[in-house]
Length: 232
Image (cartoon, rainbow, N blue to C red; front, side, top):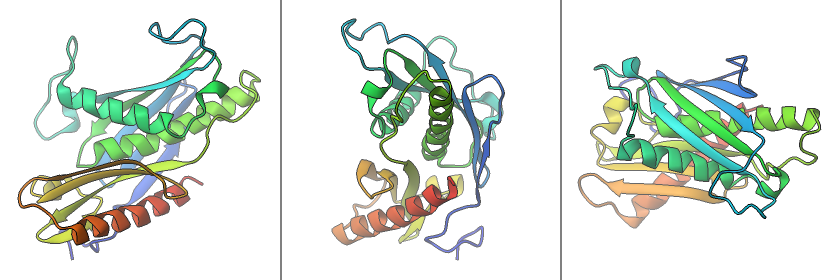
C-alpha cells in the first residue's frame, strides 16, 4: 500500500472538465490527483513559416508552461528563453498529438495546444498529453460543425501515464514524492489499440531487468486503457 492508500497499479483520481475557458476553440482542465493542468486548443488558418508553401497539410504543435505558484517554491516565468526541460516536454506533447492526426485533413492550418500547469504533483507531462488530446478533440468537432474541415483528422485516441520503480516495486501514476525517489522513471504514450507512441524509461539509480521493463509496459498499458475510457 502506498502513502496515499493506492495499490501499486492504481491511478490517482482523474477528472476532465471540458470547456474550462471560453475563448479557446477547445479547453480542458485535467486533474490527476493534485496535479492540475489547463489545456487549450487554438486554431490559426495558416501553416507554420517553415513549412513548404506548396504543402497542403496542416500542423499540430504544443507549448508547455509551469506557472510560478504551481510548485511548493515559486518558479520563475520563462519570458525570453525556455529551459531544456520545457522544450523537451512541449516537443513530447506535440509529437504525441501529431501521431494520432492525419495532417492532410487539416488543410493549411495550425492547431496549437497550450498546457499550463497550475498545480504540480508529478506527471505533469503525461497529464498535459491527456488533456491536450481532449482539447484537440473538442476543437476538431467544432471545426467540423463549422464546415471548416470536412473529415475527422483524428485517427485514434491516445493517452499517457507515468510509471516507475519505487522501493523495488513497479508503481503506476507517480506523485511527486514517489517520482523524486524512483529508481526507474518511465513516461508512456499509447493509442487506444495499444500502439506505442513514446516509451521513455530511464534508470535513475540501479539498472532494471527485462522482466521489470515488461511489467512497466503492461502496467502503463492497463492505466492508459482506463484513462481512455474516462474520455467518454
